[in-house]
Length: 215
Image (cartoon, one colour):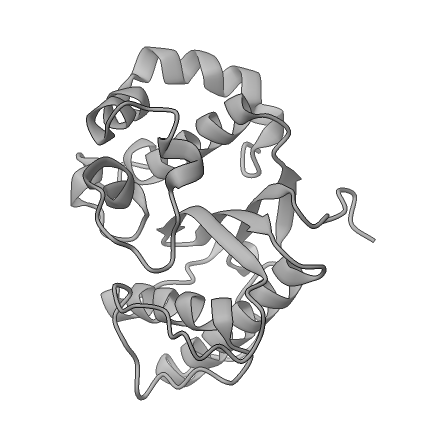
């Protein structure tokens, strides 16, 4: 049993990283494939074909084979881990979604990079989002990952997160940002909120116990 049960209608910060903190993404193509599969499993249980592929920005097919189980509110893919901000829409939706996604991507990595053994460090971790304030600050925490990890000097240059969807309104068929962005007058206001380093430092101390990789 999970310490924090996953309840339909609630929002969770979902996190998982590579076994022994090793990388799970090795090439740009790997990030793209993960996002493609993430879109696919929002509406389907059929195996995702990595040979066919499609763009992260392709519309989600209306011919779904299952009821949509999750709503992705924000995401960030990092070299050795990923973050998702997810609302569960049906019972078991998050667990089913992450299981299909992780199994599919693990298989892809095993074949593509000729590796064996587990890719992820056990089952994913989940933290309940308990307030609107926490939702907004965790979205910032997720989007700041590439910057605070010194992967990029400018968040707008990082393509493997939902940040550009938030600040530029770019259509993103994986992520629905409205639950967060409705609290800001514009994308520019959200950008200023994210990049307010002094404020972020203070708020991070408040929410450290609500994030997943502070150890």
